[in-house]
Image 1 (cartoon, helix red, strand yellow):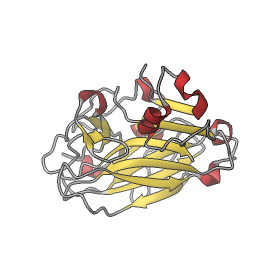
Image 2 (image 1 turned 90 degrees about the vertical axis):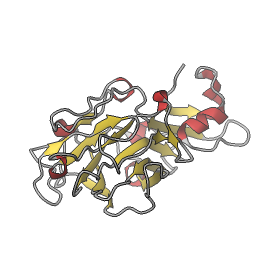
Image 3 (image 1 turned 135 degrees about the vertical axis):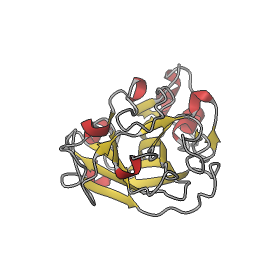
Image 4 (image 1 turned 30 degrees about the vertical axis):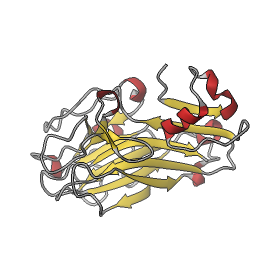
Length: 257
């Protein structure tokens, strides 16, 4: 049985989930298993997009349609309250794309999806998919927006006294890469004026080729551990300057530790 999401599972009970050992399920989420005993309550949600349909197009009206394990995501204008996200300028909104190996443009994009926890590339078709911004043609003039499903951390965490983090992997190879922002809001559609900005990534280093390893980012969500309402994570990218600006994200994970 393929497992893509696990929530509120005690280590002692992990073996019940399709006979998966605690060591192997720790590899699934890039987190070490406890050395002995049942351990504390552990909770994680992971999206690697393996079962998604490829959507690689420079047509700004043709982008990824979430399905399968990511069916509760919302991508593109339907995630936005209004016409624009509006952080820096009123750029029209489009959706993120999906791909397996590279993107439609040379000199940018990853060579394959992320392998957790090493950051190396996976090029097997079953584990290769990732989200990326297709900035060819007029794409660089748009703002790319996608969001996760809603999470009520106060009810889904095994222990609300523990740390809660958003972790994800980014690949930013290209001479024209733009900016990436992570936001959170308690509404299912939002914009820069309403959402809370969690982090801004406006420069990247260490990406010298398509095969450069993915880099993991970690953002604390501790302020939301005990808030009894659903919250949505928004990933927003804009300001690529030319076609070598396809930025990718993968392995999006909410982790209690």
